[in-house]
Structure formats: C-alpha cells, structure tokens
Image (cartoon, rainbow, N blue to C red; front, top):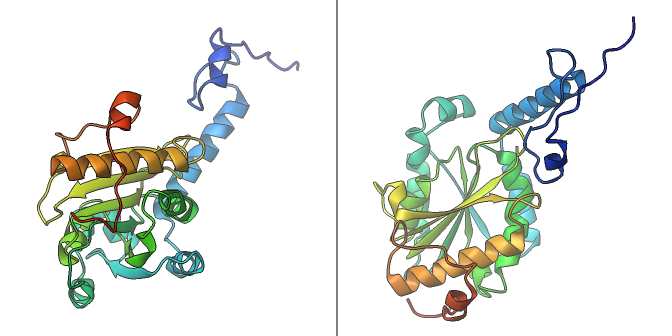
Length: 263
C-alpha cells in the first residue's frame, strides 16, 4: 500500500518567522503524523513544566556561586496540587515565612527588591533567572547587596506581601509564566511600586516571554531598568506607566536608576 503524500500548505514560508503551529500541511483529511507527534511532545513538555517542582537547593547554590545572597519563603499552598487548585493560597505567605521576613526586614527601606517565584514553570526559573540577574548588574551595580527572595508555590501577588514585609519601594517578581505549546520555559517580570497586600494587576507593569527564543536577557534588563526609572520619576507603576523604551527620544531623556541613589 503506497504512502499517502503530504499536501503542502501555501503559507509554509511563514513557518520561518514563528514557532507557532501554522501551515502544517495535511495527509488526506488529517494532519501529517509527524505534526501530531510534535504536538503531543509539546503538550507533554507544557504539562511537565507546570507540575515539576523547583529545585530550591540547586537554585540557591547557583545564586551563591554568582555572588547573590538569597532568602527562601513559601506561600500558604503546602504542595503543588494545592497550589494549582487554590490560586488564592499562592498569593499569601505561610505564617513561618511571614515571621522570617519580619525578622529579616532592614532598618532602612529597600529601593528595589527582587523576588524569584516558581509560578507555573519552574523550568523558566531554573534556566533564566540567573542570566537575567547578571544582565541587570550594569544598570544596578549594587544589586547583590540585598538578598534575592526565592518564593515557592508562589503567584505574582505574593511579591506584594514580601515587598511590604521588607519595606521595599519597588518589587520586581521574576516568575515562571503559564507554558504554551511552543514555550514551556517562558519567564515573566512584574514590577510593582509601593507593594502591599490587596493590590490588583492594574498596579503592575509586565515584561513577558523572557528567554533566548523570545525577549533576550539584555533586552529584558534594559526594559526593566527603563520602567524602574520611569516609576521613580512618576511615583507609581501600573496603568499610568508606559513602556516607551523602544522610543529613542524618550529613552535618551530617562536616566537609568541606581540602587545606591536616594528614592
């Protein structure tokens, strides 16, 4: 029995421009077997990224070797299954972690706090957070002076309580984004000014798809530094703060922030 030929799609040339599943062709009335198998693999990778626990020891060691101190906390979601079923528990600190941060609170306010949260892709955290922190160092030479808070079973809003506990003027949450079928390791950055419990996403600015195949580390660091500078000038983050970092005239008028400067 002869093999059915694959009928090509007229939009095949677009596949060189995007990893999205388009112009897959067909075999009879069905997708080619190779494309069905690739879809199954991508779906499995996305599911694994959601369920895989973050290796806290490995991440802490990697940070330490790179010169970054760290502090571990956890949300009220006691395990991964609870975290996925109860998003609300991922937004609040476990009592023991709240007590730990209360003891660790600095005497003076922190200009910027970095929170690394596992979110929905621990793979994104293990792959991309350290390279991103290193890319931020030219903008923030004193970044290593304050510990990076590593939060497990964490949602974005957990950064509000962490930032409030440590009296931070700005908190940047680096979090694993919900995996897609072409990006199981996408990292998101959420910047919030004046963090406190109860804020909504309207108070945040988001930089998405940070990874070599998306927004690379250098560009993500540049955009974050631009937003931080804008937040300090404007006095707030969120819907009033626009990312005009790709407009050269505006960028040239906005000084890059220094952690050592006054707020």
